[in-house]
Amino acid sequence: MANVRLNNVVKRFNEVVAVNKVNLDIQDEEFIVLVGPSGCGKTTTLRMVAGLEEIDDGEIYIGDTLVNDVPPKDRDIAMVFQNYALYPHMDVYNNMAFGLKLRKFPKSEIDQRVKEAADLLGIPELLKRKPKQLSGGQRQRVAVGRAIVRHPKVFLFDEPLSNLDAKLRVQMRAELSKLHNRLKTTMIYVTHDQVEAMTMGDRIVVMRDGLVQQVGSPIELYNTPNNKFVGGFIGTPSMNFLDVVMKKEGDDMVLDGQSFKITIPAEHKEKTAPYADQEVTFGVRPQDIYDLQFARELEHGHENLIESTVDVVEPLGSEQIVYLSCGHHTIVAVIDMQSTLDVGDTIKASVDTSKIHVFRNDTEEAII
Image (cartoon, helix red, strand yellow):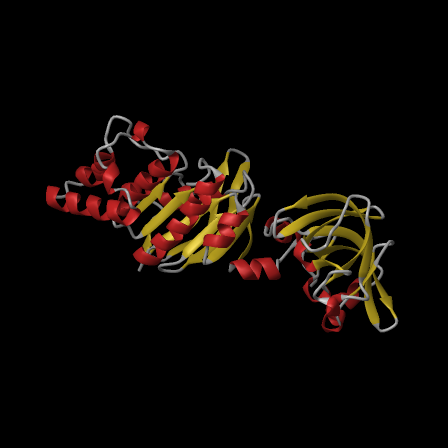
């Protein structure tokens, strides 16, 4: 079994705690993605699993083996680096075969493994070329192929697509996902790109300042973020955060933003009641705001309106990103292209209240 467990893992660099009591249980054959901003500890966590960084506290298991003191070469892992780390003087074949030669594999088995990996990655015609003769995408495939030939228990990827252009990155994301489905091997993938995380991971680990903020499926993190940071980090464009006051009006709990009011759905009244008369943060995703005039979802319609002025319109073909002003608030909405909006227009934006979020101001934890 190639499950990976981290129990209270800590890493310090002098006085800085880079990774702070991280607990993770990664299942056999799972594709898990560590995501977060630069400096959050995701790459350090990956390097500790690989054995390239010593841990200061805690335990790391690969399968049933405690690997705290096991050197990297004996952990049965293969790592793909951001900069490919290919030997420039060797052709593709020998780059892929190098690790097997060091382990004294028979020549026939090396040949078989390299050719199988090359076929799997669609690069058999590149085997005699040197790295300098390859494009970025081809080099990345070679780096992945060098890992595949090892037949490791666990693959580790450290931002492997960050040096590629946008179109190739999308293509390689799909290829790595297909590769995981074929190989059925545990993969741990680090990225700062939440789109990569959302599209590739079975589960996502969101990190910030060395701490795990939330672990869950892409849909869980998108729909039910634990806190304001996760809500803002996951999703494109980012979630809108508006400063409001929670008020009780009759039987309803209402978010009062001075220039607008949003009624909390009845099923959330109990959760929100303790925060009456407190300042809170109202979170709503751009995709959950509609131009009422053209909204197909008119059931979200004639109440919970935010009357706004259009500041900027960014047409994207199938949809448009619209920046709105409402009092002292700035709101981003993703609106259907059939809404013909111009800068300076006034629109009535309807909010889908079944998908709103409310966060505490002190701890930034989600109330709903």
